[in-house]
Amino acid sequence: MTFKEKVYNLLNEGLTEKPAVFLIDLTITDSFKVIVTLDADNGVVLQDCIDISRAIENNLDREEQDFSLEVASVGVGSPLKIVRQYKKNVGRTLIVKVANETIEAKLVDANEEFITLAWEAREPKKIGKGKETVQKRQEIPYSEIKEAIVTVTF
Image 1 (cartoon, helix red, strand yellow):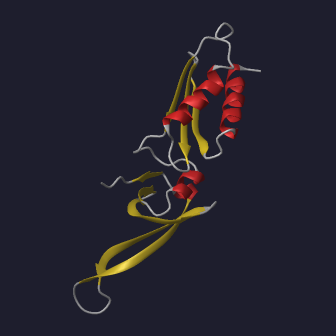
Image 2 (tube, one colour; image 1 turned 90 degrees about the vertical axis):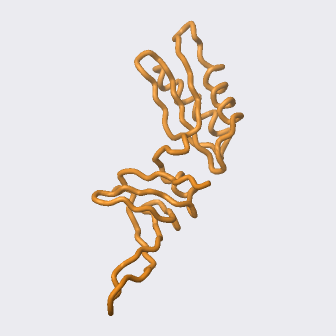
Image 3 (cartoon, rainbow, N blue to C red; image 1 turned 180 degrees about the vertical axis):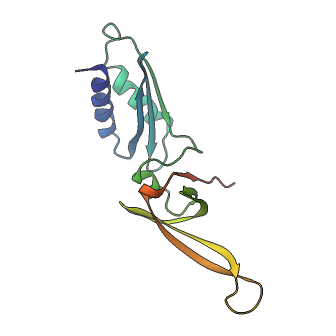
C-alpha cells in the first residue's frame, strides 16, 4: 500500500466517526506534505480538525515515511467544490461565474444535477418608458459553473 493510500484510508476512517464533516480536498506533495481541507454541514470546529489530524498522524510511522500534516477548514472566500457544499448553503447569496456572465443571487435550491438561483433585476418596461423590477430565477447545471463563492454579509 502506498503512502497516499494509507493516508486516504486513515482519513476515511476518521471521517466515519464524524458524519457531519466531509472532505473537500486531499493533497500530498512530492515532499510528503499532507494537506487536508474539510467542511461540515454546520461548520468545522477546531476539535474536528484535531480529531482528523490525530486519526491520520497517530496511525502512520514517521520512521517508515517522514511527512508533515496540515488539517484545516475550507476558507470563507473559497469556491464551492462539491454538491454537499451547495446544499448546505441554500438560502445564502452566491456569486456564480458561468461561461459569459457572473450572477449574484440567492441560492434557493441545490440537487444532484443543478442549482437554482433567484434574484431581482431592473429591466425596461414592456409597455411605456422606464424600468421595472422583475423576479428572475435560473437553473444552472454544475457542469456550467466555473466558480461559485458564498458572499459574506455583516
